[in-house]
Image 1 (cartoon, rainbow, N blue to C red):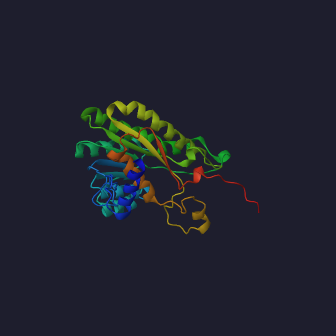
Image 2 (spheres, rainbow, N blue to C red; image 1 turned 180 degrees about the horizontal axis):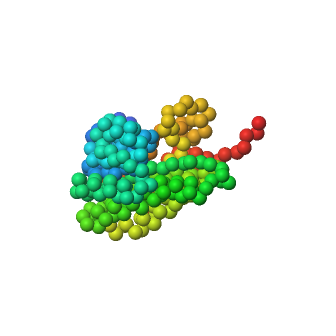
Image 3 (cartoon, one colour; image 1 turned 90 degrees about the horizontal axis):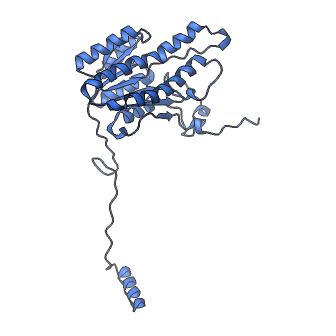
Length: 282
């Protein structure tokens, strides 16, 4: 009897009469199949070092989502061009001047009634042989790369302590926080501190609903200089990075989709830091 049942079912299947089991249709969420959309409510955003390179791409990306964006930079000419191009608010200042940065943040918060997202992008390298470096030069890099994060993060935290609406802090770190070349002591030290500062801030600001993460870019071509094929081939992803690669990572970490990502470092380097490298045999 069992054999007859199986034969009958096989015959139904061959003739196309068999009933098909219900199967859940899996498609990407969004406006149509193949397109994913993320709900990104307008937010009030402050970016340090937003005039050029990665900072400019970040300003462009957030303006493109309908956010209110303010940014600061020491380069007044480039800053005004960026502000005009994307409709952002530009504050010319040197971030090493904590009083000027604090005043800029205060003016934005007063005008907009608050602040939701801070992106600490500003940074300088100033690579120099260690034995030729001075303590003042070392401190100057820390004053630009590290100290502003304290100022901006505290300003955002004070806002959120009042309105309880939560927020985002995104710090631009570097793959040099874990790998170095000679003469990069000040830069590497500042980026290592940013990585540690990020997870420390996460623990302190979690009660306010603020997530704190950092992004470590690898080789990002900001100047548009001629690149060799070997430069691209060195990356497992097949190319050198561009500023928009980092801007898109910022959008993700600032979006509701990343609400459960906290205290993390996102490496965006085309796979280079995970690549096993052997010396050339030639």
